[in-house]
Amino acid sequence: MSSVDIRRALARRGEQGQVSILILGYTVVAILLVVGTIAVTSAQLSRMRLLDAADGAALDAADSLDLGAYQDGIGTAVPVSDATVAATAEHYLAARPLPVGMSSWGVTRGTGSPDGRTAVVRLTGEADLPLVGGLLDALGGSVTITVESRARSVVR
Image 1 (cartoon, helix red, strand yellow):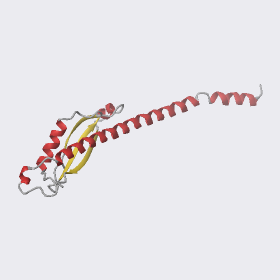
Image 2 (cartoon, helix red, strand yellow; image 1 turned 180 degrees about the horizontal axis):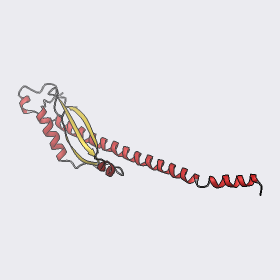
Image 3 (spheres, one colour; image 1 turned 90 degrees about the vertical axis):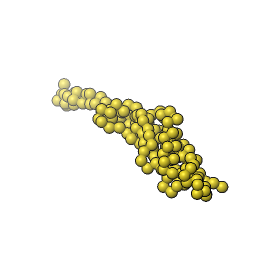
């Protein structure tokens, strides 16, 4: 056996198993990308469900006539107040089941009527993310989502 053949044999032996480490690394990266994509998609779906609830609560609140303001007449829109908007939004959420992917939800600060005619509903909720939710809990964190919806009942 010549020295060239020996060098070639040693060079081949030294590179054995290197592809396995590369494949393992790429597999870990691919798994992390899939898990991250699932978590982000779940958070987005939770946000859309929370926004849907806020839209419904705002529409319901916009139709809630504030009896105190009604004494002055209705005008061009149904009069609402901070108290009626908040109470209607709370009642609306209490009558609905918690959406899939949410661990809690509620009416938050900013809910009310800035002008006496527009109902503004702000909801906040904790998203329950698959695959990474346990890791976030162990790290002491969570994903909080806040949405806002506005509605006005126009009188014609």
